[in-house]
Length: 303
Ligand SMILES: Cc1cc2nc3c(=O)[nH]c(=O)nc-3n(C[C@H](O)[C@H](O)[C@H](O)COP(=O)(O)OP(=O)(O)OC[C@H]3O[C@@H](n4cnc5c(N)ncnc54)[C@H](O)[C@@H]3O)c2cc1C
Image (tube, rainbow, N blue to C red; front, side):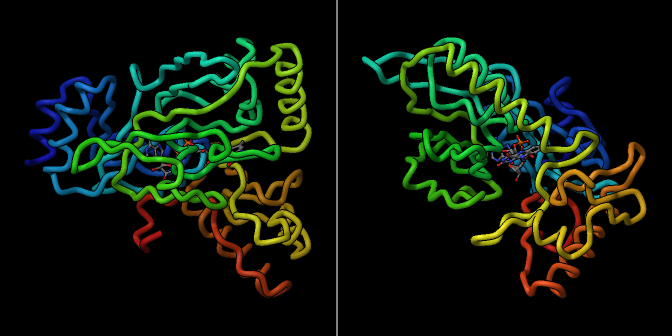
């Protein structure tokens, strides 16, 4: 199966030579051979096998809030879940609430809606600008919680068809899960509980306020590096004298040293190169080897 055949069958659901970098929160970086947007399970059933049949590697993109796509065009197919995959439903079971979220749904939208409905325990997610799919792959978290804390199961689609995962099978760690590059999360279920909407909405406001105060604006991908055990990547980067350090179009934020900001017309490769410089300086000053939190696409070195 060639990409041309996929394009012919996919009509308006397949975009050739699509810019992927522009769909990330860094808003820089290259394009992919094709971007396939699935709006429903029937799209997935129809086009999914055709994607696999091209034999090209693929990557799922949610909101691109943790992705850095190398400059240039890549022989990769990107998959994106929209429409039916961005729905949120729930049902009550006494004080427990079983929530089903589509993988393409934004966490902040879900956090606000659930709070307003008096469904509590998911407020932390208002500050994480990703989708449920990306959050499950990465075990996104913040403000003392993470997706693993409430996720009860996830459904994926892959070459072998649909699979249900229990939380134990997902084997969540700090910003990691057992999901492989070929597992496409389509939906997740959360176990939350009934509570008061007013304090929950107040918590949401507080988190949003905290984020505005502590995190920089501009084109960035959130934390560039994971926090090493018992320490903070931002503290180590600052200690290494890297705050404000610029490499071509990328600069270490003055506000939060673990954030890299890229210029409006900048290059993804500059972000990656700056990350290498920062990691080397941290290693030289503290001996700590920083590990990237970002997922890389198209850099050709297996990362
Ligand atoms: C300003 C800012 C603040 C942030 N704050 C936080 C924070 O507090 N805590 C935190 O954990 N993260 C934070 N992040 C990072 C990011 O928002 C999270 O990692 C988020 O979970 C990524 O979701 P996404 O949909 O954007 O995924 P993407 O960036 O699109 O993808 C990330 C990874 O998930 C995979 N993926 C995406 N969708 C699916 C799917 N449906 N199925 C399988 N795999 C999928 C991708 O292939 C990729 O490997 C922040 C980012 C920004 C820009």
